[in-house]
Image (cartoon, rainbow, N blue to C red; front, top):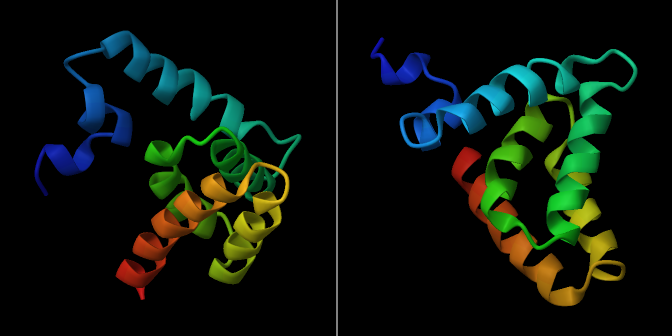
Length: 109
């Protein structure tokens, strides 16, 4: 296994460039917030995917769709979230999100 395979996604993306942001991402966000027992990871993923879509933040969406599947959400449920948000977050955001989802789901099939 290579050294790169042992790195977190944040370390691979911005490790040497912004180590403090990596630390906050790995230690606080994913090490603390995502591990809190008060809300299941499946729900956290659903909320995060919806927030990314509503905010038009499709750059982070790809990885969070994958994480959502790991946390128990199905492809069908995630597509339904996007369809539902078309009416609350806007059609262009939903279309952009669905294009990201298409690349994630087709690649993984």
